[in-house]
Image (cartoon, rainbow, N blue to C red):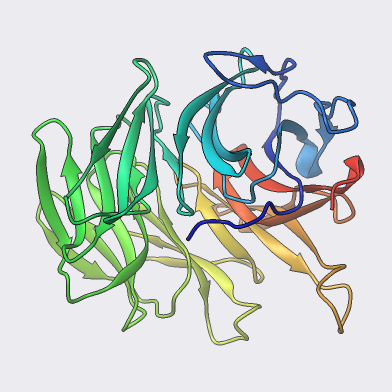
Length: 351
C-alpha cells in the first residue's frame, strides 16, 4: 500500500557501546543527510543506557524500519524523495550515503549480514515483487516467482532469500542454483517469516493457527514450537536460538518475549513484558521496545524505550531516555551490543 502523505520527521539511529560517525556526505547519486530542516547538524553522539552511545545516522521522513549488516558498517533504510519512497544505504565507516534510485513498497527491507545486498519489495501492475540490490555492482534485479512475492529476508551471504509468494506459499530461493523450494504450502498462510543467517533455517508463524514453526532446509521438515499467537519472530545466524515475541497469558499489550533453544528445547522467558523485535546474530541478546503510557485518555504523550535483554543474565536494560525518543517499535539487531532503530528525536524538535 502506497503512502499518500509524508509522516512526521523521524530518524534512523544506531545504538552502540562504542561508535563514532563522521558527517554524512553525498555519494554515488545519493543526497546529503547531515543537517536538519533548520540547518543544524543532528549528528552528535549522545549517552545511552547501559554505558552506550546513540548516534543519529540520517534525518528521514519515513517510519519504515532500518536494517544493518552484522558488523554495523552498512545501514539500509527508506526515505522520501519528493512523494516517492526510495532505498538508501549509509556507510557508517565513511559517513557516505548511497541512493538506490528505485522506489520501494511498504514492506520490510533486509540487508545481508555481510552487507553485500539489500532485498526489498517493489509494486507493479501485476502485484508486489521481491528485488535485490547488489551493492558492489549497483545492480538491481527482480527475483522470485512471476506470480509475485514480498517482505523477503536474506542470508548473510545474499545467496538464499525467503519470501511469501502469491499463490505459491512461502518459498526459499537459492540464488546459486536458481531453484525455488517450498517451505510452506499455499493453503497455509504465514506471516513474520525470517531466515537464519546461514541460510539453513526458517522461522515463521501460521496466521490461522497462530503457531510458531521452525523449518530445516537440510531435512525439509517443520517443527512446531510451544507458542501460539501472532507476533514477531527472529532467529540467530546458526539457527539454534529462536525469538518469539509476546507470549504468555497476560494482556496482549503486556506479554513477555521468549527464546527457544533448538538443541536443548529449553524456553527462556524475558524477566518482564517487552515487545521484542530482533535477536543478535550470536543468539545471546534480544532487542525490543517498551511502551511508556503517560496518559489514560490519549496516546499523544506516550513514549517507547528501546531495550536490551541479556538472555544469559536474564536482565533487561533500557537504552534510550524516556523523554528523548519515540522509537515506533522499529528495531533491528546489529550485534549483541549494537541496534538500529527509527524514531522521532524529541531533542531536535521532531514531532
